[in-house]
Image (cartoon, rainbow, N blue to C red; front, side, top):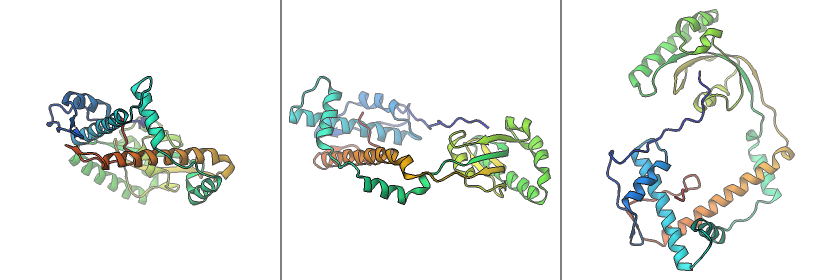
Length: 272
């Protein structure tokens, strides 16, 4: 099983897929070529999503540029001017020690060392876009699990007979896993499992996995003093992102924007 974990679905070549919208900000039309060029910087699973991200980024930049003109803010570069503008308008309160302690107490499960798992698996590989093939592989995995629940000694045999992973040469062993070593969708499913054979197949981009947890070493709870700086940085960043989002909301509410419906939140603010 591959340990690649940075896959992101991308849709960047949308020019031939669908027409681009005509977007304007307070009467100023965003050039179609500029929008077309911007799309490549916003990976997305579909043409619509890529255009939405790119269009939103350009609208935000145009709003900020118009504010620079209105307020006559001059810096060495446009980027510095925009940064200065945001700093002046996106105000937030630095988290206090009490805020940090409260966050820690309410989210202790986030501050636990990662468990270590010794995992073996059987991979029934199938392409992620092969819907019919995935249905068949899932059914096959369920039948193999039913047999294994009756006789777990068959696991090694089934690894040799059915697994499409290179780990089939080591009895299906993936070795000792900790978080970040495998793809996210597999990781999310495997780490909560208890030791032994899992009674359902796990689905990943590679196909279906029949999983046997040979050993699990639970993580340990971290003390507040060990993570307080991390918490403070996180809360600072979250409050900053929220303040930027609030500022942009105000600009949007005060502006006339046509051709796109903005969907602003802390996670999708793109200043193109």
